Amino acid sequence: MRFSAIADDSKSVEALTTAISSAAKYSKQGVVSVKILPDSLSFVCATGVRDGFFMEIRMEQQEVFSAFHMEGLAPDNNAIVFEMDLTQLMQAMTIKEEATKWKLVKRNNLPHLAIEMRVNAILKYIPVMIHCER
Image (cartoon, rainbow, N blue to C red; front, side, top):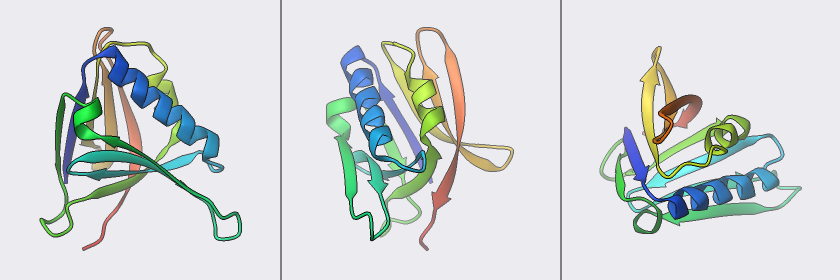
């Protein structure tokens, strides 16, 4: 699995920040699922059956990202799904920057989402829990 994306203008970074803060309002556990498809990135918040809501904020690749590359597990299952802590994601995105780079990396043999803010050269690694279907 591989993923990297670059948003290199302030409007795109602002759209990502708005999507993350919207997902945070609906997440009760402070965790959001991220679904990456070849043409989009989605933030998914779902509650249990009794609470009864599902929200997906889908951001099309060509509308937000200037560069977008992903490879799933297999050609027939070309998707990456993982969960991550919203608090850490919001902290990484609160800095007002003109560009950001997101990349799925492995640190100490554990998956992380690396978020690099370009102007100030800030790099934050956020641990993620990958959901694999083979």
